[in-house]
Amino acid sequence: MLQPRSAQDGKENRTRRSSPFAAAKDSMEKVFYYSTNNKSERADFETALLNGMASNYGLYMLARKDIPKLTPAEIYGMKGKPYADIAFDVLNPFIGAEIPEEKLRQILNDAYSETVIPTKIQNVWGRAHIMWLTQGPTYSFKDYAARFYARCLDHFLEKRGERKTVIVATSGDTGGAIADALHGLKNVDVIVLYPKGEVSPGQRRQMTVLGGNVHAFEVNGDFDVCQALAKLLIADVEFQRELFNGQKCSFTSANSISIGRLLPQAVYPFFAYSRTFGYPGDEMYASPPSGNFGDMMGTVIAKEMGLPIPRIICGVNANITFPRFMNTGQYIVGKTMKSPSSAMRVSHPSNVARAFDFYNGHIYDERGPDGKVIKEGIIDIMPDMDAMHRDIYSTSIDDNLCYETIRKVYERFGIILEPHGAVGWAAMERMFPNAAIDKPFVMVYETADPGKLRDEVFEALKIRPEPPPRMKAQEGMPEIINLISSAPDTGKDEKLILSSAQIAEAKEKITKLFSH
Image 1 (spheres, rainbow, N blue to C red):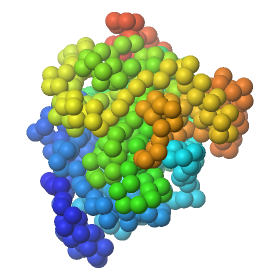
Image 2 (cartoon, rainbow, N blue to C red):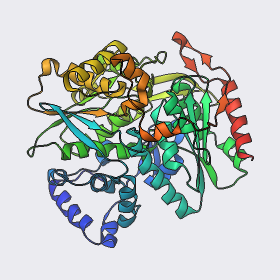
Image 3 (cartoon, rainbow, N blue to C red):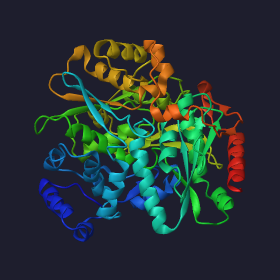
């Protein structure tokens, strides 16, 4: 397994990576991943990507000591490089032993062409910045991970001569990004599960108008119900055998539970730093608005790789499970709360399992014989809370403050934030009250084009931004929607829980879909 490297090791490896491909590939060790619920499992990147979810409903993760390190010289050398080249510098240590350098560069150049997905860093005032991850094909930061994931998946499936069905749950932006990235690929089908009434019409159409190999399912419930259904289907090997008649086809995940979605989220903090640091040793606080915690964990990995981030600002909306845990040590999963930041309506973030693992803890969901979750968020090993507090500041931004932040930023700077970016900005201001940002600089992640959430922006500003061009073109297109209309169960605190009727209906409709 890849071990942390000294500065001298980094110098030697940097020389090898710039040498001809055969020598570079031979010199690299393969990185292995394990299940957060089964440390004895070992899977390389290809296997982990194709499996989607690890054994025992765990997430693929690698030990903190095995996360590759970049030297300060390597990090400072990123200054001015295109996004695709920085992505290569960050991702090659993880997967360079499995994907040839020439092919990996091709994947990254295609995924991150600046004509398709430009990335903008805006200095707002003083040392406060916004990173606009909003200009890709579906106008969401999800495009970055989705485009990398899709191209890696297609590469491995083509090599194996296999086919996969990707199952993805979405609270707003993930579904559209994955659907767009995988649409038309010959070795892939896509099933997108989205909660009824909880995505905007524009977000819904990004999933429902594509057709072909993209199948949109509207689920009676919230995101957590969709996520539970996705996990259960991916883990149900017997159903997959019946569905595909023993053929080489099975389910995999494209949610942030996928290692192929997590790793590329370590790239954009490096890009942000490359465009803003003024001198060696300059530090950057990162403020990613957090829902399922993929962007937060990507930033944790970037910090561990050597990016000088003193602390990560983890702002959430009204779903307070994680900040409450950070304050009290108690992990209590309540009802999923609606919020204008729709992509962050998550009461039990999947990537919390990776965060616990990273800090030497363990959290899991208790399940019955049928795979249904009986109890969420059981901690049997507490993480190192002192270390978590040193690295992460987490706070909840309620709806009123979210709207107030949108108004304030617009009135002061003429910038229209949408609700997710507003959460990131408000969390940054809470950590640095009274505009006390003088020495370090701060990077707030803006994760969606304001035109994707027109009604929410209107609520704050009485201005309704124009939808982005591709979304505007989709407004008159016919939609194809598969309904899962069975009701979810209701648990403690009125929390919605995936029901047996929903599981049965989903299997029936997926079977009918694939029988044609």
